Image (cartoon, rainbow, N blue to C red; front, side):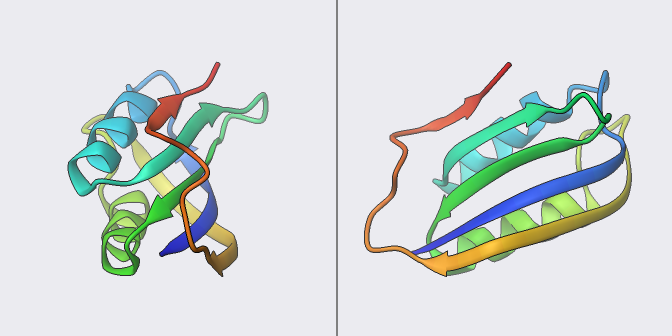
Length: 93
């Protein structure tokens, strides 16, 4: 299992980005969280099967919510984990 932090830049606030991110993560069976930042980005952490995390990375970089514009997405602190730290995928305020 893989754990990775992410930050998405662009027009990603006020466009239901967090809701769509949660929906996609749940669809893929990932756990973690997502929240808006005061800098206008969206940050979060995801955990799950390596291939599903890869799918989510692609989604965060290239798809997003219908009204969003993704300029870039950065991933950091990627590491293998033996078990998830979260029970579901949450939207944090």
